[in-house]
Amino acid sequence: MSIVRPIARPIMESITRPITTPSTGSAWSPARLFTTSEPGIAYDLTDKTKLYQDSTRTTLVSANGDPIGSVTDLSGNGKHASQATTASKPLFQGYADFDGVDDSWATAAIDFTGTNKATVVVSATKTADRNQVLVELGPNTNITAGSFVLHFPADATPVNLVANRGAVALSGGIYSLPAGITAAVLTARYDLSLASYLSATARVNGAEITETPNASPDPGGGTFRNDVLTIGRRTSAAFTGRIYRMIVIGRTLTAAELSRAEAWCAAPAGVVLP
Amino acid sequence: MSYVGPYSLVIPNGVKANGSTVFGVLDPDSGGAATFSVPLSADGQEPATYWGCRTLLESATYTALTTMDTTTFMAYVNNLATTRGRGQVSGVSFKNSLQIGGPDFWTFIASLGLQRVTVAI
Image (cartoon, rainbow over all chains, first blue to last red):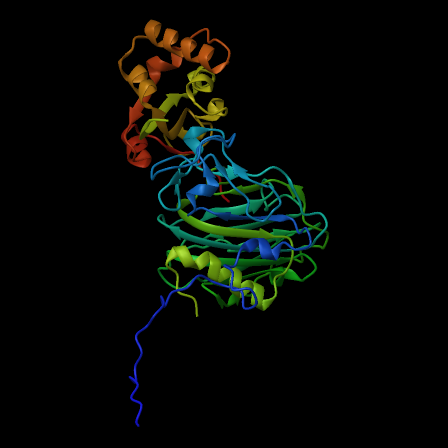
């Protein structure tokens, strides 16, 4: 007796599955990166159950157009981002919408003094073409020791995409982003023990990008500082655009960890990674 | 909470202190005194001659800002201050100089002959 089976079986489950861990099958969370009390944060600006309209975290964001006064830290460190001035609150639109005028958040001080390494991963879309701050440790990396900054640079005259300042000097990596890029997963890696511009390197959309050799001095060692993280603004350099997810952690990630972190950030931003 | 806007707001530097005090009451959150945070001037250079912001407003506050005379407005602010457990204000002089525009902040300040005072990053 012959047995006839169809050659092609229908697809029984969604092709798109959430990012899962191989061993448990549960959805990947950035909290998995913070296993030994590393300083830092992880924010999901697309999940309104983690966002509050007020800085006292009383009223959840419920609809598009609501102001975001506090963002829950998913790392386990409890370093929620907040903004107590309504005029300076980004608006929820399925992501955090920064108006480029006066919007920003800040955390309480985060102690990075135990490390000279850090990694930042952010998914963002810029809607204005100018140099603008995405995230910064400390008030101004240009002049404050132990700081780091990630910019979303302008197309024509970019500043350092990434920069850090050690005990001695500011060092940064100058990059030419792919032409016309507006939506991106930007990754910054900082290491104050390394020389010159190599102390601050970057990836865009999951791929290494070529750093332009420059005359940055050595940052001069030391550790990063105990200070606030500011998201979206330094004085006049306010970010105009959307931020979807972000991770800031006080260590270097392994290749596998970086891949997962970038994938987690890319997922809601419509960015396709290699 | 019911908001309208965003609106662009601009006041002269000379009334910034008063505007900050009043918005310390008007803002439903605790940081209203820092509302006017964007320095402006005609040539984009320091010193700032005006200060601006782009903000949501509670609908009652928008009505108060756009329709009330200063006496009625001051009573509105101080009633709100009582409700919110904040200090009473002694004047609302900034309101006479307040300019309110739509959500496009940059077009609005340009229409006033102003630009942001910029600092190189």
